[in-house]
Length: 121
Image 1 (spheres, one colour):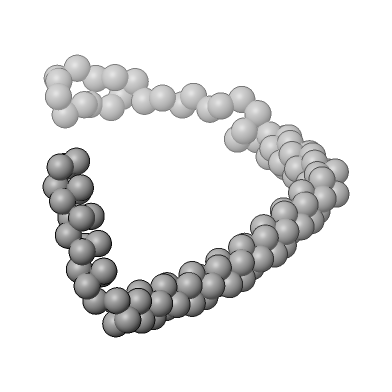
Image 2: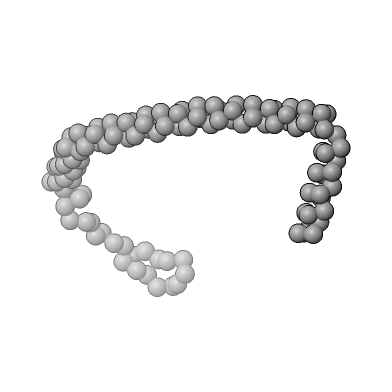
C-alpha cells in the first residue's frame, strides 16, 4: 500500500500493464505496425512523385511566361517614357521659340486664358 501526501488513507499501488505493449509479442506488433505504416507512406510518396514533378514543371513554365511578359512590358514602358520625354522637350522648345518670336501675342493669350480660368474656377 502506498500513502498519498494529501490524506491519511492508503491507496493500493497499481500493477496494471497495457495489454500487448509490455510483452515481447506487443513489441513485435508495434514493429510490424510501424513497418506497415512506413511502407504505406513510401508507396504513397512513390505514387505521388509523378504528379508533383508535373506540377513543378507547370509552375516553372508559368513563371518563365510571366517573366517574359514582365520583360516585354518593361521594355515597352522604357520606350514610351523616352518618346514622352522627347515630346516634352520638343513642346518646351517650340513654346520658347513662339514666345520669343511673338511676345505681345503670348502675353495677350496668357491674359485671356487666365481670365477664362478665373471665371470658371
